Length: 343
Image (cartoon, rainbow, N blue to C red):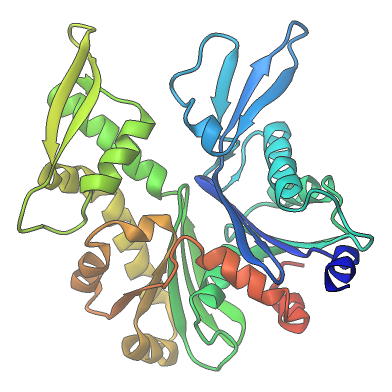
């Protein structure tokens, strides 16, 4: 009987529509989907695009597609760059986690970067509404990340969150369920990958794709000096001779390659600390800075930020899932949801 009853109630969802990864949280079930935000499309004879693959399968095609097939990342810098493909991707993910809607259509919370434009808000909202949602809430990512990281956002005390995603870094100071200060920086995992691509091109005359750059970052990328150097065989094309080439790179040179985008984050963090009211600054000195997002998992990043700011720096328990976990928690707290959601 319980299963029959469950089929009639609403499957409320929280969605972190990220530049690199889309995560979906279903009320009562937790995170049910973590997939790359990639769609493979094929042009038919009439020039219309047909979806071939979404998520992991589509990501495998990046940089490897023949003519007529394209692997697309429909979100750039945290917002929708290709509305049609983003809508198809969202519909695919939602249909997979909830194959058929119950009688009561769901509420959907979608997390968006701080400071997105009204046009971008409308595009995100319409994408969700097209899937059959009865009510759509937009929630700023830093607020969602802070809730997901377990910070006491409703208390009269300062909380600082730094959410480093694929396309953006969101820095926010939160108190009394409101954002005291926030900045959205177009620096994230993608910029780090681009820095690695440029470094190998400049230093080794090697052209690599974004998937190889991401693999290098994950395996030997670091923000701080390490005692033992690690190596990675980077495969790509020799720019000079145009033939395949393999180059061995080590962690110290990748640290140097990542220095520029990481210092942009450091400078933005310093600006945020300077703009924070004194009483809240005192709270941050005691409680420290909390890191969330996939980019926060870069080895040695917490230590680097400690050295640069002189403050305690902590990593959220689930950095990648923090945003969607925070949004998911609000599905059980409609009063707070209406208080913190965008109007």
